[in-house]
Length: 515
Image (cartoon, rainbow, N blue to C red; front, top):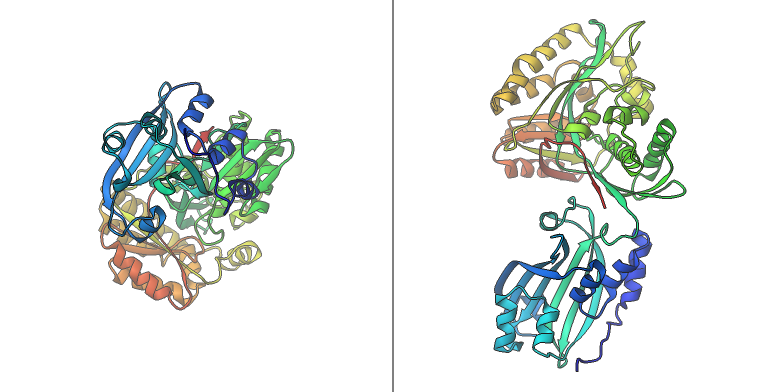
């Protein structure tokens, strides 16, 4: 007979699950069972799905025990340990249900047990039963972690989407036989359907025309980024509720979308976000994610442009909404200007109420081998609100000659070099536009560190550097030597601190998943 089952008392799994629910909201009964069971997970999955469960081995290698592994398994440093990673799959639907990683000290295994473990796709519970191994499971912990690339390859989840994970040991004769970590998406095994929205971010290279001489105004160019992201979940609820970072901003956007389209309320949870007012379009992506989640939950076919209009984005630049919709390198056409135009004066998006997002007039795939370093120093955030409005009033209109040269750089230099993947020519155009039009104004008003960052990253080998929107984010683009550029930026920011992100263009828009 198997040894009597038991659970660890420190921490008790029931307390760990309660703590998870305090942080994440209510878990479903199935999720609680998967985290808390001290029996066969494979058997439990077969009951839940009604289908047999099969094992697919993703990785298996014998490794020497390091210090942590030796302590965990109560073995000697350097002892051989079988490291096994498997996916437990619904054999009928083919869906991965659980990702399981195990460490097994080989010196504690009989030869036949070892053969089954290392040579066959057999669940560990089935191996234990086959060999009549008397054992118990001691549950050590249950936690929530963000999905990494490994989990995104196994499950249909977005990076940074939340995963539930538990760690336990199989004990035989008082000693650990196997240490196992099992992980599955937070949004699986739910008793309510959910919508998950993952957005890009963006860098805004420049506004095109703040002279108004042509009868148009605004316009802009930008690049969608794969990182950082917003990850937002939505589920049907009787009242509007928002959890997570930037809750007030998300709630305001949700109410605007509900009012515009007549949608019921929902519970929205921000699982991952990044700072707003740093030049990466975080406010737009949060608002668009909230609007998209609501529309998807209730089957409302609003376009990206309609959602952007509802949440008040795109009144000056349309790059953020266009990045959300389709990613890539984006050029928007701005707005008509004058007494009969969409705009009659110079205003930022935050003050351009009732102005629809501009049309995208060009979009192109950005070369995937060009990399982008973002340096975000810990200094005052970019101009916003009343301060941004005052800057527009003081410095607009900009000289027509600047606008003409800016348009030449974009149309004659930047766009052809992008299509031809000529990084040097593209970089020359980006460097040139830093001194033209409203971008010259944005740079003129920056902390001296911004200018030092741009210079340092350029000297370290970047093809171009620039200020994104009102900053303080500085970007650098290159196709090699990016670690040197990161090092130069880190050294430059050392007196104030800050964040560095190595990313690429995202040539697609926001992604939506329903569970």
